[in-house]
Image (tube, rainbow, N blue to C red; front, side):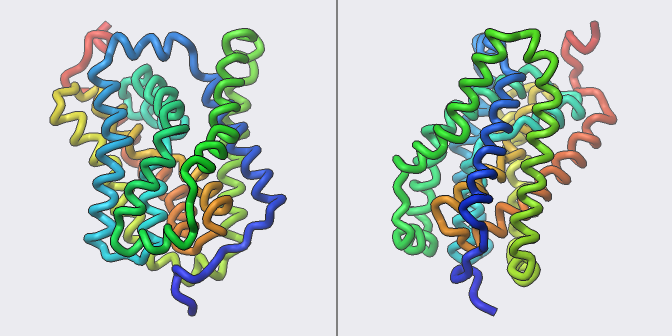
Length: 307
């Protein structure tokens, strides 16, 4: 069995183009659920928003970096964990926040703002933490990652669809209201189908190497949810907001990570296995957490819940 850092998963260019289109459709669906009022809400809860954004783009990548060192994982696995941590959240976080009886308005606003910020910050964040890693930095140099090129790719697959979705929601509200639920469900199922396809097409590799990443993914995912919760708690946010921030930080768009891995890293083994396993485990863990929270009201209950 080859070392995980030496394998390259198979994913043909045509499939990658379709995956790019699916991810763009997913971002379009997120934008259809976004309104100008979502951005205006930021002005009404600036502290909660600032805490959530900082937890996602500053604290989580730093915590992930430390976790890769403590676990002593291979370079490609470390890069996969760092890349996932740098990804923006997906709109499944909004659904889970609602199930958890958290602040859905905060969750929706954070998703919109985070995806906009990620267009520029994500490649820079990944390049910084990846190059800082004592083992993974050498692997990153051999790949010769260009953050500017990655920005262009991210603009094409999440930036433009997001802007188009915002325009559609603003200019065609009636049409948007009719189709947004269908778009959200279809795009999410299509993304899951492609993650399954990526795993099925490389089943032997996943079977051989999943044991290397499963513990790392489970710990990393739990740490991501915990990072959001701790950041929200130590900064004085109430339980209602803490639930939203925890889920928003814990849910990462592993589909975007998978696209970037096949586009820029040639399907590098450890990275792809991490992103593939994360894509499923993240939803399972998030659903379990949201269901547990959903069984009890936030404490102390905010005024809007008492009304």
